[in-house]
Length: 375
Image (spheres, rainbow, N blue to C red):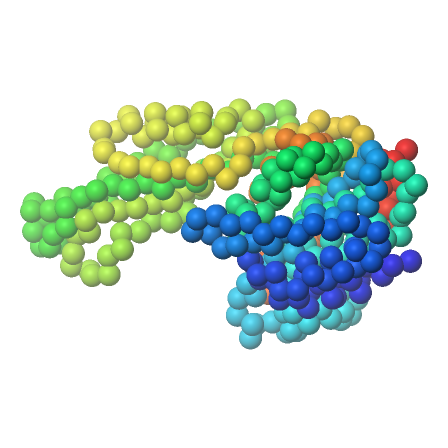
């Protein structure tokens, strides 16, 4: 049997801080090509964003094509002095695998790779869609790779995303949808002046605060059958002012909304503008929709994942749409998609780690899913 922990250790040692490839895709391509997978590397570019390398690999040419989607890029380590181990050491200590990306999400990639190497079905296909852009702008990664695959006529029948969905125990949560993400940036213009002569200036800060009070007071909804309530959070307020005796010329704020299936990005923007327009305060607002909400009804894929989790761990998982966004927001347009990975407790934290035994169990879960989806 292939050891997924050894693969995870090797991947963690690749310094693939987004958007750097760091040798991680080279490592995967080498193993996959040696085990019958046809590999394609694609680098995509876009204005004002870094180039990103991506990998698609497939073994087999018949249906069903069971794809695993993941990312080898990781977030920066932060203050390396705060780590008790080398962030890129990939060491197992007291039964725990440490390193940046251990849970998000090199451990899951390693688990699925081990499963794919051990499971060699006579029918069907196994594939990998691996990006280096998930922790970055998510512009030159999965989204563009999916467009390239569509141009090639490549079809995926099922897709498993290895995000760290588990909460308290391995496999306790399977994601079958996600809320959308909406970011708004508000600017209120004023007139700069001396604080001792406010009648000669126009302070934009109180006006911005009034607008934010309206937004913060909105109850967007009470949730839906498959989604928790939408929520709006103010995440930044700034004037760029470094002087304590100057009224600023402009004030800016940033907020983010995680919205459910009651809204699209467009209808949410309309609702927010309508609320702010009740105040007679001029403002500018730019918006970015990071992804629309989506939901994959329970079916063969989620059923196979749930059954595999219960078989390996003895517990039934919850089918959830909670949490943040992932690249599944792009994939759901192409095929049924569900997310299952390791515990998320230390994702992006100092001393990120997972239980080494969980990596092995996750590989067993993935093997069972592959067998079930081929049946």
